[in-house]
Amino acid sequence: MNIQEFINGIFSLRTRRFGTVAEYMMKALIEVNMSGDLAYDLSDSENNRIEVKFSTVMKKNKSTITEENVIQQILDATVEHRMMNSHDIYSLPFDCNIQQVKTAEFDVLYYGLFFQDKIAIFKVKSEDVFSLPNYSNKQHRGNEGEGQFHLNTGTIQYHLDNQLYCWLSYEELYELFLELQKK
Image (cartoon, rainbow, N blue to C red; front, side, top):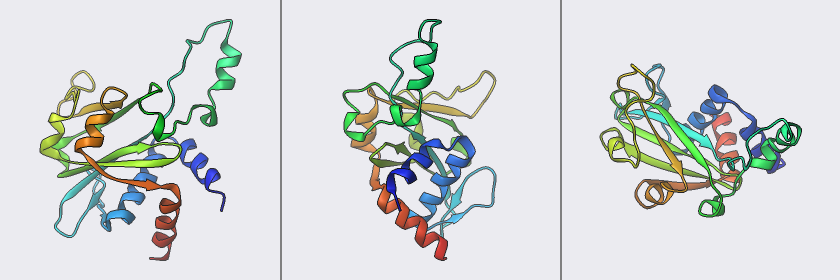
């Protein structure tokens, strides 16, 4: 197995399919069950409702698209050009939005960042989400009870210091998925 192909595949997934990968990762990692409920993703043996929210980390674009650079901007937009390593969090700008956070619908939130070299997994109780840096309980106009927060160069240290659950390598993730297939 070529681990870089595995990583590229994860980074190429969009929205729901990427979210499903993150859910299966957490299911295998913390040994819980899929919830069967649309309001939250997983549940444990104590019936805790577990939500899973992850993002891929991409370098911010350096330039705005203009008539003069549109072709080059398209060529530079590939996943391979924009993936970011975890050791670059203090030197390269990035901004990942953890959104559609509905604290009334879960007891525990596992959230995190897929970097090019490894995965950062964080954990927070629903009642503590409100104290995360720059948490906003207003995601969309008129959308009550749904919030968001950003992990970026300005907030990442707080999450690393206070909410880090673990780091996971892509080799470890691959092995988790192999074990999941056997069950």
